[in-house]
Amino acid sequence: MAHDIISDALNNIMNAKRARKKSAVARTYSKVLIEILKIAKEEGYIEDFKINEKEKNIRINFSRLIECKAIKPRFFASVEGIEAYVRRFLPARDLGVIIISTNKGLMTHKEAIEKNTGGALVAYFY
Image (cartoon, rainbow, N blue to C red):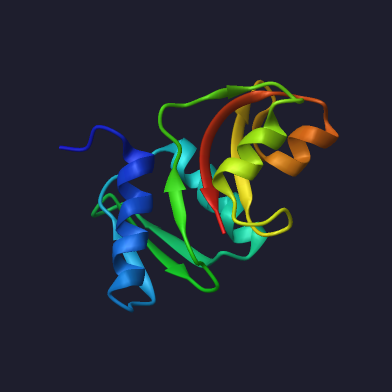
């Protein structure tokens, strides 16, 4: 039984990548996971994902993904504190994105800095 849908889905992606597969299947999904996948698709880390309503799963095709993980515990970061987490979780300044849950919805750390909004760290991709 899944306790953290986001973490389970991102672990499935990484396990499939390590097995040299081009796609992964997340057995459960939520609206938050779908939004995270949309952001990853916009950033180019995921090629496409398809929701199967009948079987209640998502097939995720990934492309130039190196690593993706959920951030646990969900640290809260102010606008000034986001840079410290970028140095902590991403290998280089311009490589990868951290997805942040703000009161204006999910967004990348770059958008959060532009909009001067802090929030809870959810996941990262690079």
